[in-house]
Length: 541
Ligand code: HXC
Image: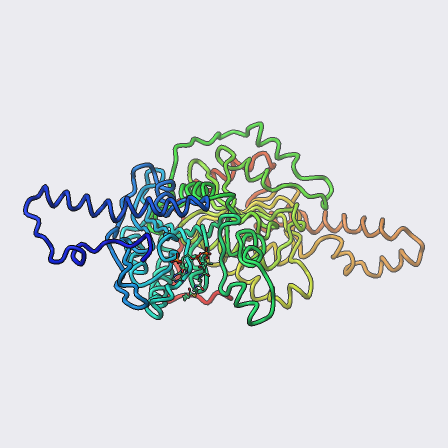
């Protein structure tokens, strides 16, 4: 027996004593609640507190609006008899579930309770989670799961595995219907990692959360490789290397705050509108806007921080970046225009010169699909010199995996506005929200360069003979190459050529961008696109 053992009144007291009056029944309820919730919570606090962690209930209470949490299934108990489990049947089992509000809007939540059987998932804990998933789908509200679990309950065998299957099936059915968010606050081991993986956003707490399919011991036995928990599956590894996670929280409070902020941008479900806050946009160019006129350096190879542009464009300069530590050569996240959510995708020139690689493509593709599924308009800011070349990229499948972003944009039907600030070369021009893929309004700054490739690359092919001749004549080859490249850029890559052909809807001063895109998204609010019926497409995976 552990501390969590609950007394079964019937067994302890022999035959049940009938309760005669309503007052007695209410007193009995209070007693049972004390045992199931208050006492269990006190024990959980002791155990988690010793590790500097919150309990499952504390996490939920801290997450939802104060006093809004309504718990489900506090009295359930497992039915397992194997391994002497019949003598240890804690109320509520190893997960706390229920509903509450965040910023006054409804949300379904569950939090695994590590202090009960290591938060492991057996039949009853699984039933609690699938019940709250079904509830969220039925009423059309986001679901947030807080994971802290040793995985499938070893004592329950195949029954526990089956429950995971039921959770995964519901995660998939809910994908694109309600927002699903996972906060990993302890271990998530084995197949248990796949529920978070199927959800839209995964937040991990630095140092105290771990996700892996096979742990360090198994890895050592099978492959001989030695690796620690943190290096293998810690928050930093999954935020910087694998891309499994979308935010690395400094601590539990930070994780909960990030998800509260995230929810404020998201609609309840795919049938409801994005949240709209009162915000009247300034309809004239402001001083902050004017600073954009000097943000693009005169040298095309000099980087700048695209976040400065994004912040200038968004209401109150607020931008919630998603996956900031993974593939930082592309920036994704949420902001607002006139109080309404906008999804932003932008090349980041100060990371790998903003080139597209496999990781950046996949990161952006999933984000485009999320925005499209939930009717969040998309702003794309383009400054991309092309795809990252190399055998590593080719052999890792840049063709197959790079196609995901093309597919995502081409499939999207939400309002889309694209702003080209500087380079838009080759396939990267097409993929980054081009008109042909479905963007509605495409504008460029006068600093834009749109061409099959950059000037230097083009000159090597187009003017090969001239360069050889210059070399033979003893001229300064670098100077010749640079002059020819500038001529090429001016004559071929000028945005006015694209505007002449209608590829761009306008060329504007950078300072006018905020006012212009605000008008554009307002004009596009009623956009409707009809697509022929199909079961589903076949996105390259
Ligand atoms: C039952 C479990 C458990 C589990 C932990 N516990 N995991 N009970 N089933 N899966 C219990 C422990 O026995 C212990 O009980 C309590 O939880 C706390 O565990 P500790 O080991 O003391 O905690 P800690 O040292 O922090 O280590 C945490 C841990 C470790 C790293 C998660 O417990 C662990 O490795 N557990 C097993 C992980 C695992 O292999 N799970 C199965 C994965 S396969 P007492 O009574 O002593 O307090 C899987 C398949 C899913 O999940 C497939 C879906 C498709």
